[in-house]
Amino acid sequence: MPLLTVIITLIVVGVVLWLINLIPMQRTIKTIINTIIVIVVIVWLMKIFGLWSYLSNITV
Image 1: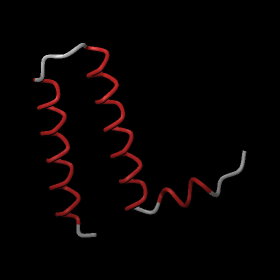
Image 2: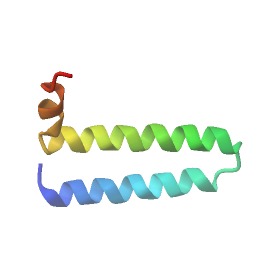
Image 3: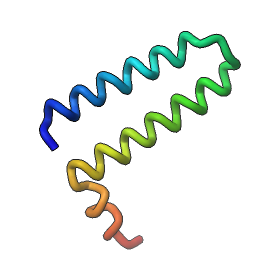
C-alpha cells in the first residue's frame, strides 16, 4: 500500500474524529467511539507495516 494512501487515510480518520467531537452527545459515548476508532486504526497500521504478524508470534 503506498505511503500516500496511508497518509490520506489517517487525515480522513482525523477529520472523522474531529466531526464526532462536534456532535452533541454524552462525553462517555464520545470517548468510547474515539477509543474504538483509534484502536482500529492502530491495528490497521500494524497490519500494513507487518508488525501484527511479528507481535502475534511472540510467546510470553
